[in-house]
Length: 128
Image 1 (cartoon, rainbow, N blue to C red):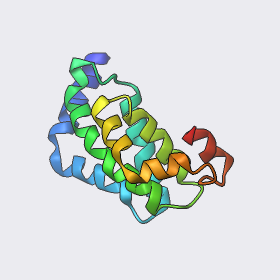
Image 2 (cartoon, rainbow, N blue to C red):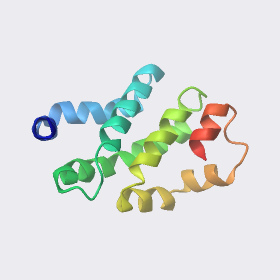
Image 3 (cartoon, helix red, strand yellow):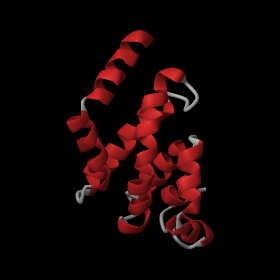
Image 4 (tube, rainbow, N blue to C red):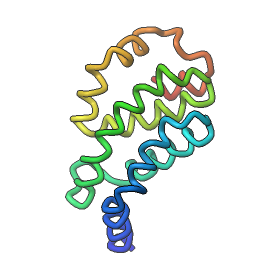
């Protein structure tokens, strides 16, 4: 089963047009699509450690998601989107490169230091 999952993952990672589409959906203007894309990436990344050799290619690609996810924190102010964004960012930060990129961004610093930035309870929990 694990081998089958890795085979499917490697197939997906080689399918560039589909991969690029899945990355672009993070910034979709329709919130439900953006939330679905963030949740899908969260699930895929949660199941694999950044140190896992079989997932190295996935995590190299995933580190490029950090920029679009940070943009969602500032460009998608709707309360129902924010928990999904914070959850994906927390999973991405398991990677040292992604964490460094996130912590160097002005968007994240401003939001982390602004304790009033999240109006909904779900977003506040996901943020902290």
